[in-house]
Length: 333
Image (cartoon, rainbow, N blue to C red):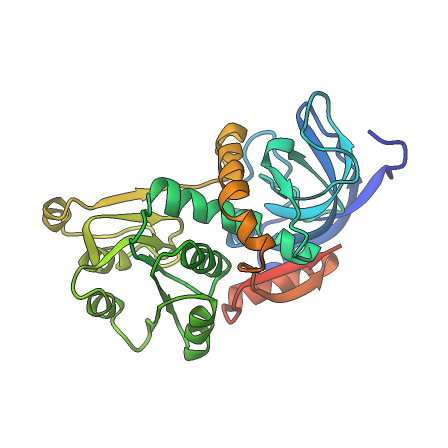
């Protein structure tokens, strides 16, 4: 640890689970990086739905992980743990973390950090890890989206949705997105979606089949679950794959298994937070090779809806819960 570091830092904690006002500023000791870890002086942190779940007491951090919310950050490397972390003090990085992001300092495994793209601000850099790691893992690794295949993104105007549209469309894939207003649909088109469907006024399964001449989407990124699952199977191509990453519509679903068998469909689900450093490191390597050049070239830029000071984390959570946002809600320190 560097002697220049303060002993204490401001952070946001959840003394008692509850509504957004449960988030409270507090002082805590600056954490110490362990072997292979780096300490990041946080410039910005992203706000994501898993943070909302943690605040409500529904998504506790894994054992040994900070109980401070926050899964993605960007900032400057302030100290190094033992061993080769791959970084130097002063490097500007963005990192995926399992917790601790809503703070002035946060520890991250060096293998889960990426250089902050020079084409982006630190706010924009902090908007990358949680959404981009999730999209790559579920669309390209689990979903195996192949050249020429079509992707359907549910909730296209969300942080995850906007990232999925940008990455897939810039890699040459036709992208279909759903959203709940015409404004959000237009935002999806502006980001690269070939078709945006207002799920409140249109039957998305019918529209997907019409757009694909009855073939269906090859991969579907599902954040809804519930009754969406059968409707997704109705517009999924033969040998198609559904990656479920959230259950905003409910955790139970009834599906026609016979149809699933006849069209050789695959449904998989995953969460990222509890996966190993090695697993997340492999995703970081893929992003560095496949996506970071697109960001540096100006082809991909995260959509930022609002930036609030760290002390206003409760207001940031309220914005996310209202659901009117397009893109990311961020905290700055």
